[in-house]
Amino acid sequence: MGKLKAFISPVSNNPDNKHEHKNIHPFVMMFFLLLVCFVISYIVPAGNYERLTTADGTELIDPDSFIYVERTPVTLWQLLLSVTQGLQQGASIIFFLFIIGGMFSILNATSAINVGIANMLKKLKGKEFLIIPILMIFFGCGSAFCGNFEEFLIFVPLILAICITTGYDSLTAVGIIFLAAAAGYGGSITNSFTVGTVQEIAGLERFSGMNLRIVLFIVLETASIIYVLWYSRIIKKTPKLSGAYEYDEKYNKEKKLNLDKVSPLTSRQTLVLIMFGAGIAISVWGIIILGYYVDELAAIFLLTGILGGFLGGLKPSEICRAFEKGCHDMLLPSLMIGLANSIVVLLSDANILDIFIHYLAEGMDRIPTVLLACVMFLIHSIFNVVVPSGSAQAVTTMPLMIPIADAAGITRQTAVLAYQLGDAFTNVLAPTGGEILAALAICKVPYGKWLRFLLPIFVIWCLIALVFLVYATQSSYGPM
Image (cartoon, rainbow, N blue to C red; front, side, top):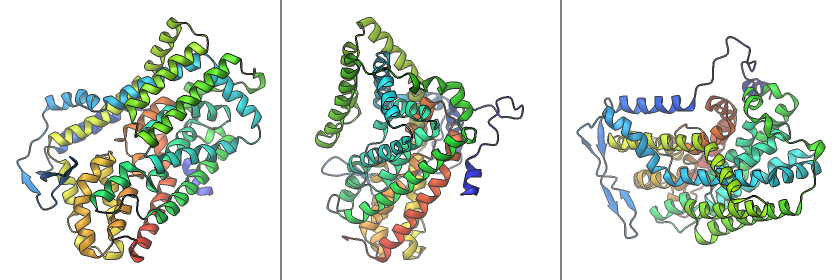
């Protein structure tokens, strides 16, 4: 653990250090990635698979239809257009974030959330660490059973306030939410967006093979909780070891609540918290029972914010001003999601999305059977960096992987397992994943600091995945 502790320690957190590199604005990183896509469109050959439409309207690639086409490099005009096109593609998530920001700002204006958190933390004094496993189990189950991920952005300001108040850092806050979510996606049990979709493509019974996935989820989630508990303990003991120390001091210090002067909740504040809890409960019910997604959730949280404001004693103009401030706070995260989508727009315009999966899948017939599922996991992980959408990746990669699995004699259920693991971990690693950049932007933490925090548990996740995939191959994990 000593070496790992050294790994998470920053080179320097002294803002007066003249050799300290200034933080790179996230826009710079995203525009650099766009320029990389622009350049490779002139280098990488273009190619396409034909798409077949199933009876339910799903478009799947025809694995035997790949052809090279004339290269269509991206022009400078297309590069500029991709920014607005990416924003349009991410519109549902972007406006969801504005509603979230507005709702929290309204509820914060009533002081109900801050007072409620302060009272809870005062009661847990000396046992604050219990918050970490409780919250991570909640977020992990949301991902494993319901496929929640971007919806968790709503909790970032709340968890950030809790972590800053309890002596942890903003990296702990993001880790509590998104390490748990990634572990939940990796061990998906009834996630319709990944397991459900892919099993249908593979001709398997929906959510079959659940027993092994339950064990996988427990192992991944336990490893993630232990890692965050270990990290947070170090940071609480020695705050300057945090890679986010300087940024928390500059941007998040005011979020720390004074637990020595905690006033009891007023009746109005209690009503606001009940309203907030009801909004969360209705959202969970809607996701599980009615299949709600961001549009429906945005409507629920908009109503939650407005009613919460009135219950908290705010006037209409005060509610509007608070909502406006909340939207402003979400501007940077929203733009980051749009720019992440712009990358996919450029790759599609250049006809090089399909070429990536074609190159990755070539030569798989020469891989030893025992390692084939592991290679599939690697391919899905790489492709997930380019196309972070789980459902889009499923219809692109699985029609190729299923015949390969059949020919090699490994079960289709094992191929599905390789897909779900490959679709999980890079969601919180790659900068093309807009949600993780949005969370970091809310917390004012640079991506590089997050990467340093993430890498140890990312390696552990991958090792766990490889062990389970080898076991699935050797045990003929079924059905099929």
